[in-house]
Image: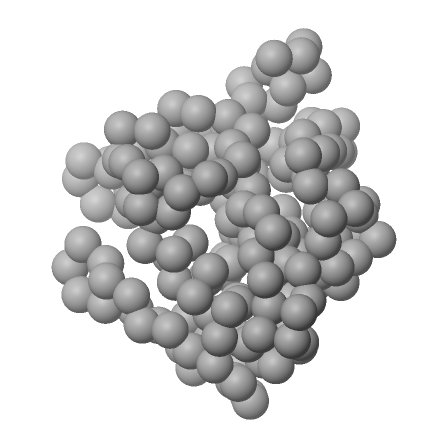
Length: 171
């Protein structure tokens, strides 16, 4: 890992017992607030996929921030993948299981048939959200050419569910 990436990783804070007891929340806002660190991680996130995608799809909510920066850096478009009820004209939706219940994500029809999509999120934990996002992109006719996350929480086994994921940091 480069010195710049080590510096960026050091900016990520772990907040114990948030939002509930036992959860170790990864606060990336200090990294986002540092222009140099943000630029470093965005470059690292998209480097394996340069030239291989037409659009970046970002998963709500912190994934939007990283996906927007990645799209700008790559000269690509941006498609938000939102929680249910947040879009005025969702074209497709996917339900997925959470630890306690289910959730739904949606997207507009801005992903067209054959469009090459780089899927971006902040953290890979158990993988449910990213699997649902893959399914959503495919329902819209897109082709996921890669998945990039800022951080993978390896102990939670998300990679076993999602498959190939490029993670800048692991923890």
